[in-house]
Image (cartoon, rainbow, N blue to C red; front, side, top):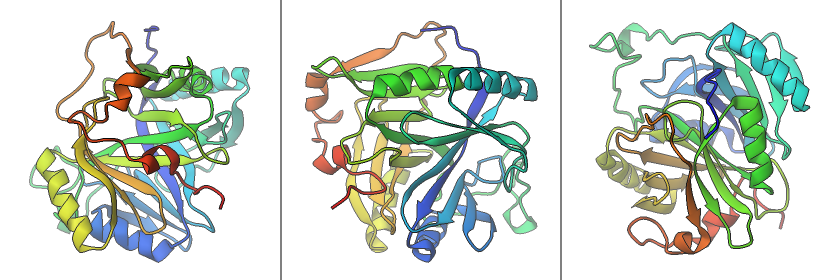
Length: 318
């Protein structure tokens, strides 16, 4: 692997659109179990109980669904300025949002070749729990509230792109991301890449687009502490009439124990447990899976359903 730069600290937040705004708010706050930190007429800001920032999910009212933008936090102000120079030199830059957003300061925005919007920021607002949410242990951001599925933290996002190799180049230049695992198809194309900017196994995945247009979202994921939390979540989703697309089961790639559902507006949302996997090995070599290996299905033999390869948001044109 290339020498990591670590100018980017971690995935900070994701904005998604909903055309069923009130229903999506209910899902994320009461069923999925995120905490609302702030809201206005058009957007609601959520976080999981151990996310340290103001928010990790921004839900915005819209006429469609899918991705608004992805925010990464830089490791310092100097690192942010360095990345801006590199992004602008590569031609991906969109410019500064000097006012920032609720929860963070100035952010530099840029766009991948397929229309997904990104931003990098450094100044951030750390979450201070109100009295009724203060944890017993001072090293946590908030107490375990037990509402809905109650995930611990944001984990990763999965995007769709027509050319995964081109997206891979973008990620290396703009975020300094390393590829931990990938799929190589029989035709020589990359079918998917899993990226990280730190010691997590991945914070963003990109898989091949089979839809009608660019800039689509595959899913967003939050993490829970143990597999039993995923099993419990399946019952919670069932009782609340949430469509379960696939799982619970275990992925072969990255070994994540997963459950995928569609929130009311149609965005795919995952709840996952990756065990204690971290990549501490400094000379980690990218794991490459073949198309034939992937056709065997998930880790324990569950076949990947067709919609997992074809469905994203916004949905395909009819």
